[in-house]
Image (tube, rainbow, N blue to C red; front, side):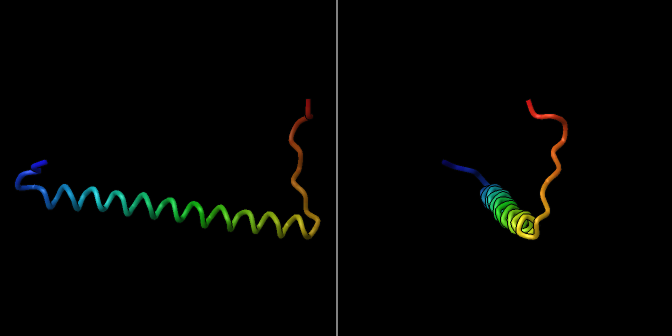
Length: 56
């Protein structure tokens, strides 16, 4: 595959996108764990979530 004279730009662009997407995935996983810890702490303290509406 010949990318021509712009090969370095194309490769660096794809690399930048891959790093950005990987960073977002890591951030989401870490934030999800933080939120789960926060919910577990609240449940341990006896605070429960309110139920909205009526169950069917």
